[in-house]
Length: 279
Image (cartoon, rainbow, N blue to C red; front, side):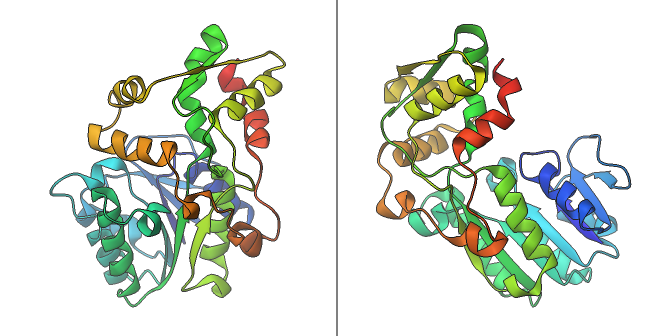
């Protein structure tokens, strides 16, 4: 049996489907009740209380770990999830980490993720670590303004990074959970091309069949908007990456192709598949 945390999100849902299609027994975990594919057991649990995961992990052979933002708050102990899983007999863990652990290792969130990675390496279980860059699905932040006014408003309109489709992250995660060949690997996951916010707006417009205007925001305007849904420190950190990506953050990684045998999907593919969110 395989346990998938973060099961209601952009990675957890396609990962669950992939595991079910592979014929595996799956238990999904999220903080709130949610509909799941037929035959999937769903458990409401809070990863901020790892001791409560003991009954969820009973009988599990593998675990996918996706840490929500509150697990990086002061006093949180996300690494203890690894210990609970190892003590419960889980033999393989795939951790969704972040590219920033390598490219910008000193931010508080990435220091915490590095500690979880280190705990996993030392746990005695089989492991794989996934380090994605920016998610294509972050474009959903613009869905309301696109629906209402056909406008994308964002900072740094002509600075791009190779954003990754969450469905590709899910396929890589499934391979790492199911195939021994990927044990002990650290996989950097990016899309196939550097794409700017302005070009993302064009791709959304093409998917809609209706032009989408791009409006440049100043950094202060963008930070004010982002601070409504994340700590100001994290907003600054994100804006640093968006405004001045390092050479490592601009690199298109070969790891998706190497693991799943095909090139990662383009942002335009993601936009076409998710166009209903922007209508």
